[in-house]
Length: 285
Ligand code: A2P
Image 1 (cartoon, protein in one colour):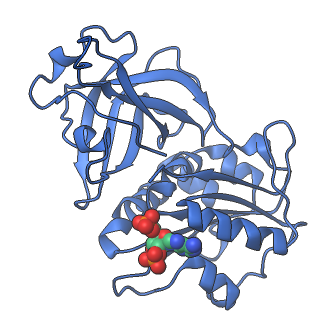
Image 2: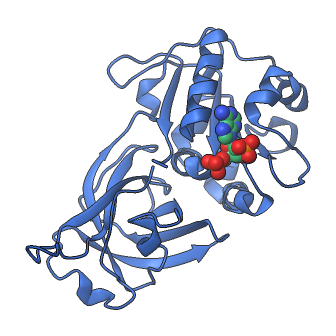
Image 3: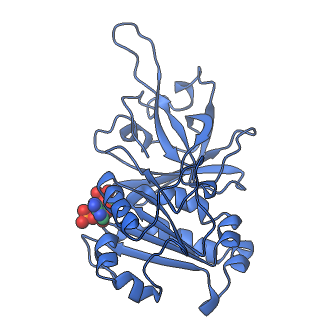
């Protein structure tokens, strides 16, 4: 999830650009992966409670209205990528060329302020799924963000015997965030104990690229249709008895995989009516 409209140039006036912000949080860390992707961390409001997989509205102040001189916040929905036990919040963002918010947000630096509305919502939550044996997290691009939260949530491993993250990106560099995330989970003392080791490890990671050579190429949807992903992972195709799925990616991907999940017999769930899969759009493009 991302984008909304024009903002103030925070490069020019970093901290002072937001004196009127009731919901300001301070940026603590920024990391750029490619010319299209970056992540940042910021302080977390003491009162903010959220469920792994939820999103909040974040942003910056817009440019003043030329007619009235008034400034308004420019906000977009961003999945919280950090787990609920983390003292800070993490977000993973695309840089949309000429995107009203991200063209400004990509220049933030530690010490700058961002606006964060502390009202988390979303459908990619454990509560929206019925109990199952295996959970699939299907992501494209920045759609991995909510799963970065869920994959660091101990509940994910207590609820399921097997957790599979698939991540399809155009280029190899776009997989870096996910690859490092998986490494960090495997080297985290508490999480490593929950996921186990070797043959018994609960966590499976299946990265693919579509426009640059990598060990596994192709859209995950095509790899599912051909059965390749199931052969590679040594698991049966999805079935409503055992499998649960969460989907987060671009719109075309979401629609395609949703239709496939329905063909496997899974039904879409919601907070109010849990079922076998849930979907959320990664960003508005
Ligand atoms: P492709 O390169 O074949 O378009 P984006 O960066 O545009 O959001 O795309 C992220 C990834 O999602 C790309 O690897 C892209 O593959 C893939 N993708 C786009 N549309 C679909 C779809 N309908 N089904 C599966 N994967 C898709």
